[in-house]
Image (cartoon, rainbow, N blue to C red; front, side):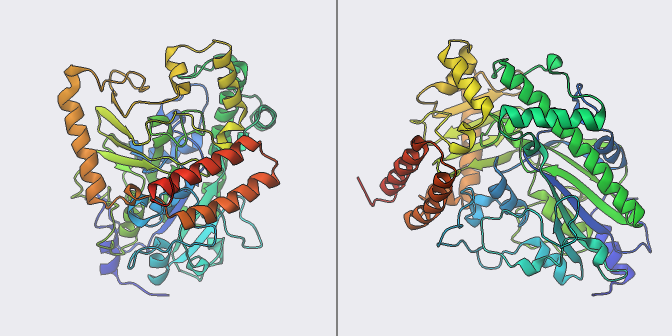
Amino acid sequence: MIKRTLSVLLFALASLPLGQVVQGAPLPNVLWIIVDDMSAHFSSYGEKLIQTPNVDALARRGVQFNNAYVTAPVCSTCRSAFITGMYQTTIGAHHHRSGRGTEKIELPEGIRPIPEIFQEAGYYTTLTGWPIREDERLGKSDYNFEWNQKMYDGADWAKRNDSQPFFAQIQLPGGKLRGGTQESAERMASRAEKTFGKRTDVNQIKLPPYYPATEIILHDWAAYLDTVRETDRVVGEILGKLDAEGDLENTMVLFMTDHGISHIRGKQFMYDEGLHVPLVIAGPGINGGQVREDLVEHIDIAAVSLAYAGIEIPRYMQAQNIMAEAYKPRKAVFAARDRCDETVEHLRSVRTHEYKYIRNYLYQRPHLQPNAYKDGKSIMKSFKEAGVNGKLNKVQTSLLNPTRPREELYSLSNDPHEIRNLVDDPAYADVLKEMRKLLSRWETKSGDQGVDPEPVRMFDSDMKVYVDTLEARRRPIEHINTIKSNIELMRKWAGEGK
């Protein structure tokens, strides 16, 4: 283990606001709690139907960021980004679960996952689920690039050497606990009833205006809120482990989700339901009770964590230390969505405090392109059935249109649900022009690799893996046909077919 002097410790916390450095303290631990498929439906963020006492308490101990956004609304691309502190579009990791076939993706030269950097600095690095398995099996990684499993020392930080600091990640299933069917949602509700004494009252659910209040969708949303309660309970257990082992007072705890709720217009979409996430950071030297409204990106957790541990942030890193005294708040945050499983897509967005701009590059296609992962969910089936039966309003029906706008522009203060597109409103012509420039500049400056088609050889390789999986699950033949259609589209983009 690399030993550090007091001067190094002071550098470790120098990036935090003044007055928060505790001289002589041991080098701090860093713990990430990362949750799947969950938006900011915690009581500290304003959710009224449930209580989340453990996340709320963590927020009171530190900083709650009310405007944190992911750079990708799907897990593998999002995780590839935050583990490197880089936009997934910059490092070529922008297609969901790419590189799982015979063709592999390597990180650009010089760019490294931050566990490697922590490990070289003497930290014990772990990756686990919960509860921590005795067999030391690692938790969810889901990176789109090749990486060395040796960058993780194990699953339990309790096995580190005496006085050795740790960098740990705990991956929680979050919204996935409710599954994708009506039956699995009911199992989650029953589980909550046993654990907490009651389930979330479906009669109190108020859905966003873009979802119809069908029985299935209402019950699914209630079960989803029960997954939030269960996640909060587990956060309490994790903090209890830290406390019992004497590590709580010397550990920076970072709580975040990997993207928003997995729903019809949430996960995989560029609306706030898919991009907005909770972010809470607490630990020694961080004044409690802070609530920040500035725009931050989820990749920033890489820079924050390195700086907190006194490790120099690599110059190439696009993440910013949002806890630094000299930090200048962003004017805007950016996001991208590309292929997800068999569904070819190319979406980009930019968000300021006031406006959201989305560019639909494949505007000739519908919002709800065929996608085996989402189409098999009970909520999607219920939504489409409501459409067939004429039970959707104009806003809801727009998701079923055969094409979509080239561009979307929303005034977020007036339209937080992003349902009134202002692209053709002359009153917003100047805003539209500025948002276009912001997005185009980011695409150029960040070296967005999504402008080039996915290599057909890689696409073919990945899709063979995916088709085999679908066939093993006996998925409907229309999804296999969708894959074949998308392969042809990729060939056209690459100039290999007509």
